[in-house]
Image (cartoon, rainbow, N blue to C red; front, side):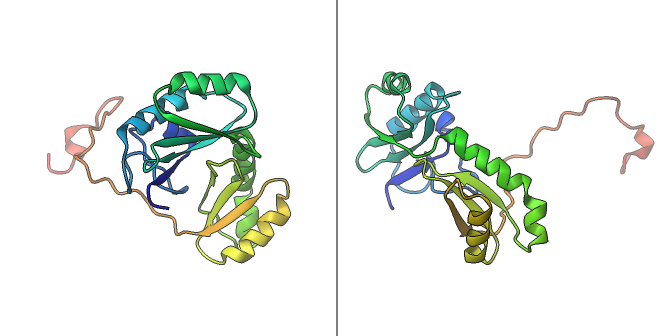
Length: 193
């Protein structure tokens, strides 16, 4: 939906700097309407929820100038969130699963990649839903079959499967600085010397 951007916990913690890895919707500074105040507040909220076992995720709505935070009921966490972003409109919503629970499910799915390959299901990645409603698993093909089989193997966590080909990041910035530790090879072994 235009104007609404979801954040994974990593991108909430570094709201102004990180792009969301092949895991879902746009992030702060990404496509769609952009509200720097919301991006900054999302970063502060990300730091405030660090280490929380009840936080699930957050969603920015630039059109409404609102951040919706999803979490398991936790008054202390709610107070930290409100203190971190006092000048933006916040909506706190109860989530069925915490980020901790969703990450545990993701680790199980990814740890079973060999099992899934044997069953001819390739898993390209997985992500927690910022609304705390389950996980998303990415496959290159046959998403409906993968959803049925994954849901059967992991019945405690709602799983959505999306067809997505693995995309390798392309560096478009200046050449990175390479630091070499240890001795360099003798000049005679370096081409062109």
